[in-house]
Length: 128
Image (cartoon, rainbow, N blue to C red; front, side):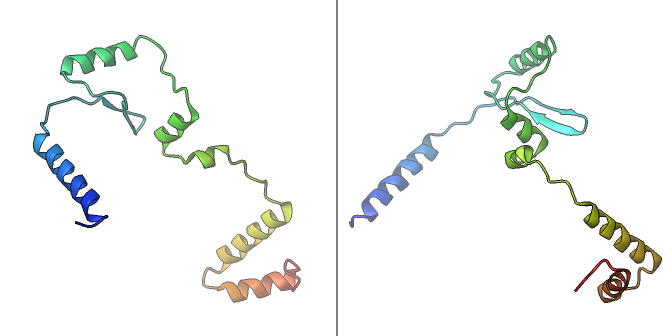
């Protein structure tokens, strides 16, 4: 056996042993829907239905809190970087330009970008 083959063979044999000795056991998970959002308890699985139901009943006795920003972001499906991002307000000129482009397009939806650009040049929105 070579230097690489021996460790790989050991990994394969260990994995095969793990698969052979694996035994399944039934468990319960706590999943609920609130305001069209699915929530799943991420702690340990419950080995009996009664344990899961008792845990669920304990939740109702106090206020529900989400302590970490990470957990809050996971619940709503938002990357954490987006949580911390603070956008830069749009400049007044850009807002006026966007509004005018929308007006031109609404007047004649068949006009393409070239016609809209020419019209904006004539009106002084574009200087080049």
